[in-house]
Image (tube, rainbow, N blue to C red; front, side):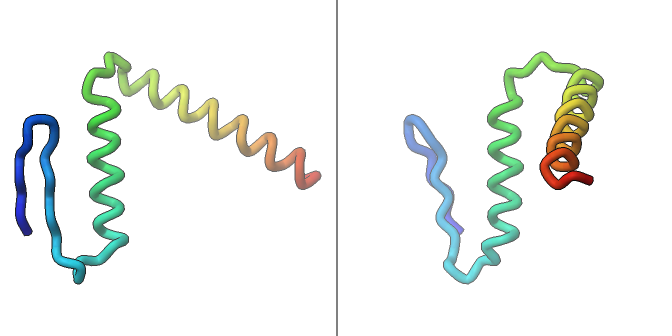
Length: 67
């Protein structure tokens, strides 16, 4: 593995033998950290939003499939 810092970014080089699913999990986590770094949202607010979104999606799925 090689890590290189440029003016605008950090470049990480990994061998091609690395497990891609584990790498994708790590990249997803890093993307999450990047997106939430400047957030002022409280966990309670995030939990409420997630619950509302899940509820709405399940309602749409049930309606679409006549469940």
